[in-house]
Figure 1 (cartoon, rainbow, N blue to C red):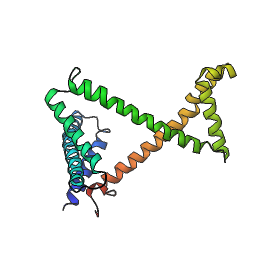
Figure 2: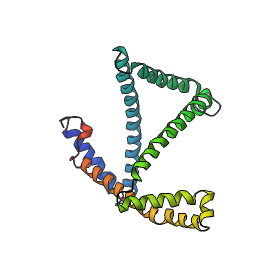
Figure 3: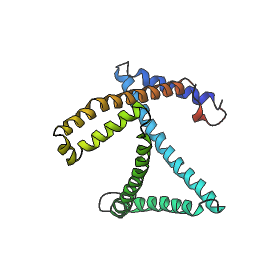
Figure 4: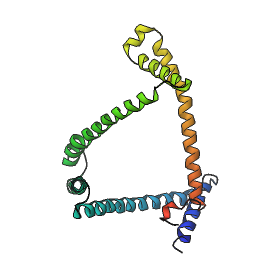
Length: 208
């Protein structure tokens, strides 16, 4: 029963949300809008449960003085402190939450994280540009052309270098991006259908 009811609910709502794109009737569209509002409400409760689960797991590690318990204590304190400040003082521009916590703390820390990721990207690019096959050679040559075309030195090498880079970005690069997006979309559709028809049951928990 614990497995069959969620599967039937998923099947009903999944098929209905698919059918509503093929049945242009006002009643169907209105009902689909109502279901989407319900989904937003359920998602809001899921966020609350997610936050509670994060707090519970981290506090459990802190109470047992587990591995990296100090970082987990900071995580919980930052989470609860940010929540209370936003709840009491508001989150609009001019408030302590927006001007201090978000603009002066969160945004710089996010920039630092992305700057750190740049080193990992450079390391991955170095490994990818090891020319061992003709595909790697093509990738390396293309990357060099694009980098030269984006800086003033590229125009000194060849006056039409920026035009070549624009063509590379708008034609071969766009083709590859669209291929990746099509593949990702097909994967999302396949996963959705597997969940709707009960083939994929990982969301029900282990052993289902």
